[in-house]
Length: 140
Image (cartoon, rainbow, N blue to C red):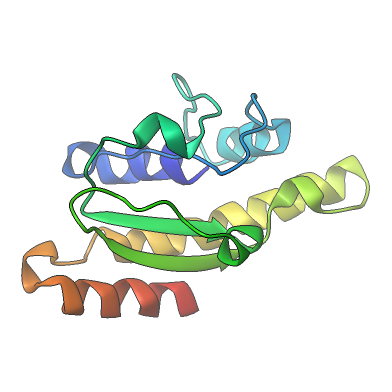
């Protein structure tokens, strides 16, 4: 959802990439339905692992799900600013289909607020200022 939202809301200003430590091999239907209800396309996205980006340099790497905070992240080339935005993974939420979709949508809406803040970050302000802002966004 993060990649789709950043591509949609950030336009050409950002290059978005999303990957996990244990990719499922498919985009979860809850994510697809949440993005559809927000008018955000997931066209061209796929389930990817971190290893697919091992040689790429990033300005920032943001981990999202609560489970990712417990895992060691790979060392990224170029020394990007890193942050963690704690969000639950809707795939693990129990309940009826309607409750699970509503939960996924709430997570996506929280993520959209954080991404709106990311779009305002001045990446020329230096790594300490960027890190501080990304950490702040993780707390909202």
